[in-house]
Length: 70
Image (cartoon, rainbow, N blue to C red; front, side, top):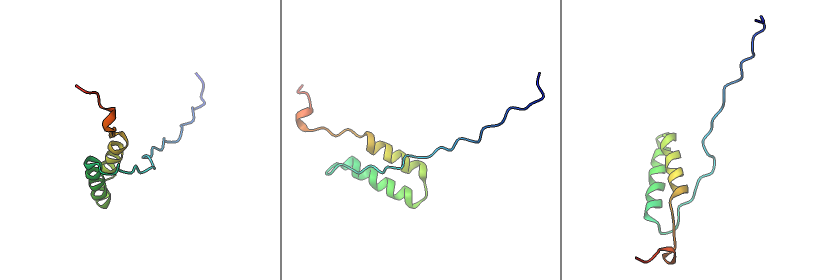
């Protein structure tokens, strides 16, 4: 076995997504998420801000013509 040591890599730096999604016009869910995100940002709650941004990004918005009839 060698006496040399293996160099240690520097720690990984993780960051939150930098883009801030915009709400869809007229969507009550998006409006509520924006309100919740604003309150969380004022309280320095980074996790909730990110969760709200993720929800806004993933919230489906479909035209009425996209719905399948039953």
